[in-house]
Length: 248
Image (tube, rainbow, N blue to C red; front, side, top):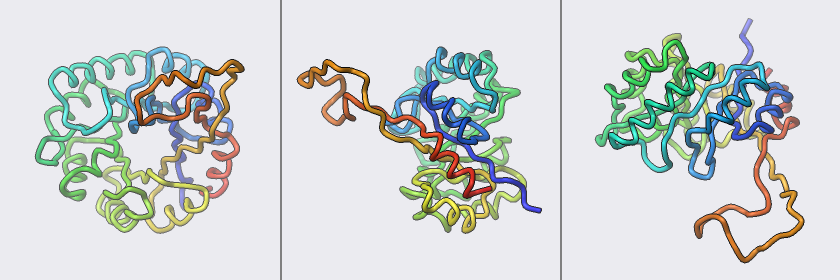
């Protein structure tokens, strides 16, 4: 009998965490600043979520958007954030560090893993920016990483589905391979069937209108490329429930 597919839901707020669990999430990935692909969440958010939900929480450790080749100062911030996450009682950490040549930064990855023990470690979609997915996977297996989050080196999982399936076969029982990036209700069953993956990563969010009645539309709070001022995305429990039903 095939085991149940683990449903990991991306959340960036206490409200989204509660909604994800209500919808049937098995695990949360907690981050903030989704506009840049996710960065490290605040200690306050982690503490509040830890009190509010009973499912495992994996925490993004990423000091900024952009590439995954970090300065010494940025790496020191990551080291501190791993310790904070561990002390707050989360289940795992999520990070990815690359060398300039497009390979996994083995020394720094190993150091963060040591600081994180006994938490689980997920190497996130930084793997999609490596020079060779199979090579990177073997490196991560050698380091003892628990799982990788990947779109198969492409913009979405459907474009990278063949590569993800190859990684699942290569991994065997040595490391988890979790598809993520562009999974929707309309394609989730296809992704699971075509890749053979037993974990999936989804967002399941919707736009939520601001509660502000007075609205000064002349003053944006972000840079030129920015999201709307008077709405934000939040996980929709009904969307998560649909994913849960579709993947078993």
